[in-house]
Amino acid sequence: MLPSRTLSVTIPRNWLDLYETIWKPEFFPKWASGLSHSPLVNAGNVWKAQGPEGAVKIRFTPHNTLGVMDHYVDTGLGKEIYIPMRIIANQEGADVVITVFRQPLMSEDKFAQDVAWVERDLQTLHKLMTS
Image 1 (cartoon, helix red, strand yellow):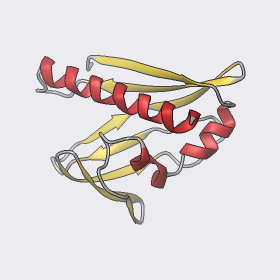
Image 2 (cartoon, rainbow, N blue to C red):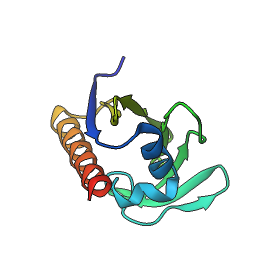
Image 3 (cartoon, rainbow, N blue to C red):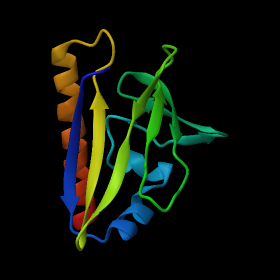
């Protein structure tokens, strides 16, 4: 089992409206700086991008009616990193929930940095969706 942290942000928008706005892979670079510093390029079943530590390939869960936005990041080191993400109804608003797993051989400091980065990205998403 990998240690994990689940992070969330509440956004005052209908959950389905929010999901339909942000589920597309092309939308992620607008807020998810930890995933990509560049536009994502469709390469068939995966999307290619420049991540913070170099080239990455990303697989996304297909569009669905459940608000699931899981994605899998391949950094080229032979193992995909699973990132579960959900949009959950919260009365008139929505919670965006992401779980960050501490990867094998990752230091506590690096894990804390990754968690802080995802928290910043969630705040960026909140600002983007409420301005």
